[in-house]
Length: 380
Image (cartoon, rainbow, N blue to C red; front, side, top):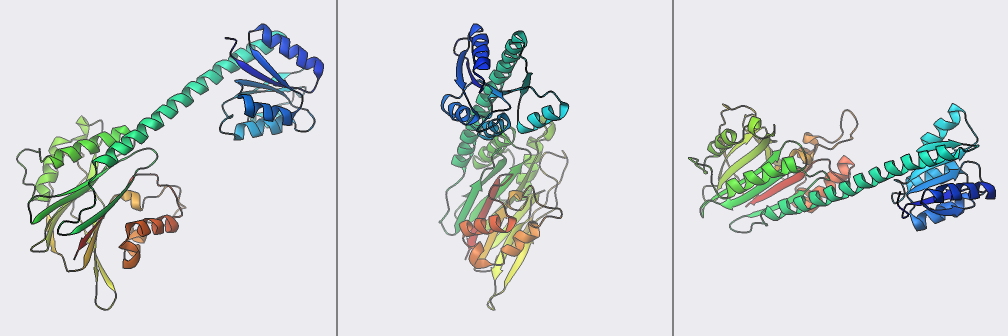
């Protein structure tokens, strides 16, 4: 080992301190010594050693309490912790391991065994440090990927009609994506898709589809006909050629002059059309067509449907991250129907920030296990 390796010895017996210090320094380690548990914990927080050797029975704070506090501290938890003890029963070892100890040394100490266990412990500590570094790099890359996905999403639309949107990436990064743009001055195209899985493997297909549709690069496709778009996507993105990735999508085209919406979906949650009534009630309509997710079946046929849009209507298009909250009890208390019922409260639902706060409160979650995307179209 290199001289930079730092070991903390927490031991109240002066003779044992001396034995441990000499044995470890002989191996080239830098050694710090504390005479009780409280002093040792304070020194560990200051120096961040690579390995701690701590006596079990000590005044002020015993070894088990020191071990527990070290392992509970995120900045110290990867330190390899060896308990030094005269206790040799299986029950004592189980208690030590349950507290977080990584290894044991039984008194009286054999110096060769001490040095060998320290070498093994330091190797495991280095491996843990390497894994932690890789984890931090991966998290940084995923955060950058999420920021890139977010940069591709369109800003709010206020031309002829209003569209507001929210994209909340999960901690794992998912495959949500959406876009909206005018095909011509009268026809607005908009869609939302959700690629299966998490991580870059899901984000990259989402980005590809988004760029493909935005550039209208699919050959022989009538982009005014949603089923035509979905058929072309299904031919292009078969899961056998996409690392078993498939995606759901809801695609619509709105004629603002005729107030007519034509739409098609592929395994995606239905869009919800909310129309307030003169008596203060609201009418909710679920807009969905049959169809398997894109990429599952090569010969899947998709169809379009159409509806007339009443004045003062709101249209919500969203991913299943809105209602698919992990860790709920069985049966879950927050479901798709719970979300639909929430949309009946037009005052809450008309503001997406308020809507998301209500979802978090009713689903009893602060973070979502999947990407959450939602579009709100104000179709006055």
